[in-house]
Structures are given as C-alpha cells and as structure tokens.
Image 1 (cartoon, helix red, strand yellow):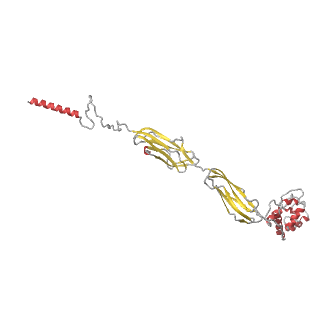
Image 2: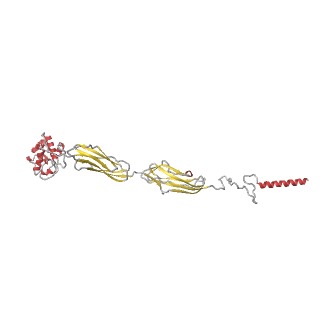
Length: 396
C-alpha cells in the first residue's frame, strides 16, 4: 500500500502514476514479482501526496485511473517523465524496472505487456568481498568459508578465471564457464597457517562483466600450538660428586623438573647413558608415564655409586612424547680405592707382609703364612744339641 508520503498527484492522464514504485536497484527484465514489489514500494516523502488506494489502487485489477494501460512499459516511462509530480521517480527507475511493472500489471489485468528494449549485460554480485578466518593453530586447517557469486545482470556471465593468491590459503569453486542470468555459484576458501603471525591473500574473478576483475580479500592469523615445555627449574646442566670410596654410595643430589608450558606434559623416559652409566643411580618422583600438568613439577634424584677407582662420567636424559626435551645433565664423580688396612667389618688382615706379633727386639715370632719363625727353629735346634752333648758327657 502506498504511503501518504509519496510525492505525486493523482490524475486520469497519469496512467500508471508510476509513483507506484521505485527501485534504487535495477531488476531483471520482465519479472512479475519484482514488478509487484515496485508497484507497492515507497521511497520518497512529501506534503502533496495520496495513498495507493486513492491513486492507482492496491492492485492493478481495480483499474483505477486507467492503471491498466501500464501494460505498456513505454507509456509508464513517458508518464513519469512528463508529469511534474512524478518526474522525481526517473532517478529511481530503470528501463528494466518499467518492464517489470508492465509484466506485473499485465499479469493482474489480463492484458498483454509490451516492453522497452533493454541493453543486456552480465553483472557480478558477491555475497562478501572479504573473508577473515581469525586465529588458526599452525598446521591446522580452518573451517571452509564460502562466498556466493551471482550473475545479477541481464546476459550470461562468462567466467574466464578464478585465481587465488597466498600459499596458506586454498580455494575451490562450483562456478561454470558460463553462468546464466540470475544463477549463482560458490567459492569455498580455507586457511592453513605454517607460521605464527598474520597472513593475507585474495581470490580474483575475471569475467565479461563490468568492473572485472572482482576480488575477495582473504586474511587470517597463525598461532602457535599449545605445548608442554619441560626444563630443569634451576637451569642445571651438570652434577659433580666429590671423592667417593669404591663400593660406597654418595649422598643424593636432587633435580627439579618443571613444566612451564600451557598444557600437560608426558614423561617418556628418565635414563642414564655414557661410559660409566652403571656408576650412577637415579630415583625421585619423575618417571616414565608421569603426567606433569601446566606449571607442575617432579624430582629426579642422583647418587654416585662407583665400581672402580678413577674419574667416572655419565649423562642423565629425560624425554617426553609431547613436550620439548629438557637439557641433558652431565654427571661426573671421582672414585677412590678402599683403605689397604682393612677390608671391612670382619677385621681380617689384608696386608701380605704384616705380622701377628712383633717382639721387643724386633724379631718376628711368627711370620704371616708360616707356623713358626725360622730363627726360633734354629735356636731350638741348637738348644737341643747342647742338651744332648751335656747328657753324653755325664754318662761318659
């Protein structure tokens, strides 16, 4: 229904007081539905006006003010141009609009429409001229974002190319080489960032339409994946153990492993490698399969248990299945041989030349490994000989 703000005057010679209508956008030629929209459209206001019911009627079938003659698009156009109160509509109506009005009026009154000759040309309409993907994790592909391309012109649209720029963007389409009037096709785009930071690209449509090429801008931001990050809390890189007797275990030294990442980290192994790996022992709460929450920590204890004298070395390494690998810890220690005076708690002598007893004169009474001292045997033999000689003299 016309608004009372439409600025044109009723009159029998105003045929289609095409005030009826008006469309800022051109429409497809000979479209009854668009003609009906135009017939009832209100787009200007003024003080000298009337309602549709008093001017051209709510429907052409009422034949008010000879509206039925609007079946001739040329007559409607001439009326708009010649009647001063309707002349303002000239800036809103195209020849295609007049043809659409004629089609609608003819359909409503049973008349035969005649049309203006309209120059035909294809036209490209895009549902969007830019696509923003937002933040996408590096290495992952975004959901597809589509743009609809429509031929809004009056002739077939010839598409000679749809090209994409930007290596991190991908584009596919359903567009044929020739797109009929009023038909549409889809251009689908995705974003797969390879580095952190913003990225831009575009899709360019080349065709026979005015304004070609037409461009759709693409943009997105790559973000680093959330990961766990394992490291030693004191940034340690080595442990040193002071002199330790072979066969004796040193005091324990403790390392703290911290997950400074944003997601949980999983420990795969805690192991010793290197030339003297068996001379060190580990313990603590860190171990294979342990999950460290973001900000969480566990401990690794290390002790030195040398099996031979000399400098000993090894390496402590923690690995993870989903986190950065912490620095390998270098382990070093010095081992010394056990004391030669004692072999342990049994008190058994270990010296090969030590004596069980040493006499006041420095003579050995019983040398190690012999039941009697040789000197004692000699003295005994001489004493026995002297005693025998004494007895022999006495008998003589």
